[in-house]
Image 1: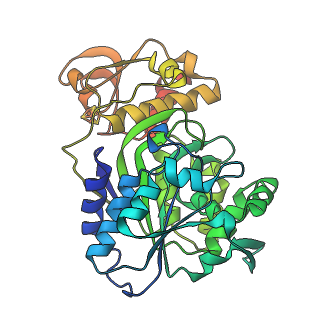
Image 2 (image 1 turned 90 degrees about the horizontal axis):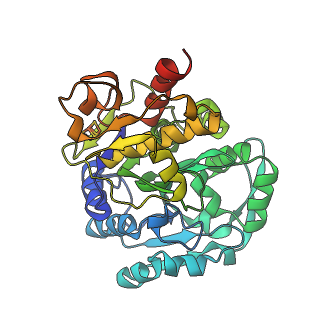
Image 3 (image 1 turned 60 degrees about the vertical axis):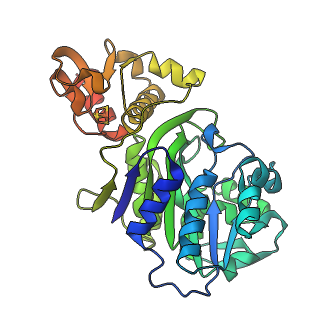
Length: 362
Ligand code: SF4
């Protein structure tokens, strides 16, 4: 099962989600619980690169209220950036001080080798002490692996030298192996703001939701569809599935959704790249989960070189409800258009498929 809550108030969304999920029900109160945000670079979460501290605050308060006090925040930023700086810039230093929680910069930790299924991997030693790992990734595209979300976020738990080796090995197999060695107890994805193109942010896109689950493969295979990717484009997801780490998302996966009547509006100022894609859109009163999906879908088409084949503009937004038109619309609000992608909100993958089927390939 996956849980999805819509909105933009990350703190209250996280609280409501965890209250419903109760992931800690069976956990031992003395257990060491590590929170692993994505602080790949020293940029605030509005950049699309890093996990909002408001989500982490929601997780901390939930756990403390339930009597869990042995909490730690662990991370190692990417090679070339300082985790200490990222803790500060991203608001985690303040958070740790407020709740009296240790911040562990894993760049300063020792390395320890562990044998996976096919590879031996160096992990940061402190990771071996964790009883429950709470993975707090951001939903982003990635130039090399296409998607970075739950499975890839564990790369922050290995030494810098090992990160370089992972890149040399093509990332996919080592990411699957890493997830074979480190078990994730809970995933809470920051998909309120993610990034369109890179893990270091710069092209933030509002997706207006937080995703919760206990299976990182299920989370990632769902997240891939949200941003218009096919599972086959992200080999580490299938490899992780085959290694028994988790299941793939499909039509039978139960999706529990919250705040369906409270989709947030688009508020972010677009980056030049997002603006270029938005030139294909006429938007009036669109919800960000819908609009974000359309931006990701257009980005996928741009990557495939087919974006310019779309004739005319694409309409999206509540303003188009009950309006008849011969144009193309996105979401149930445009159900009376001649051509309309169903869903409220639709996934980027469904938008890509519809556009390729109806406008590009015929
Ligand atoms: S279809 Fe309409 S109401 Fe539904 S998410 Fe899109 S814009 Fe919002």
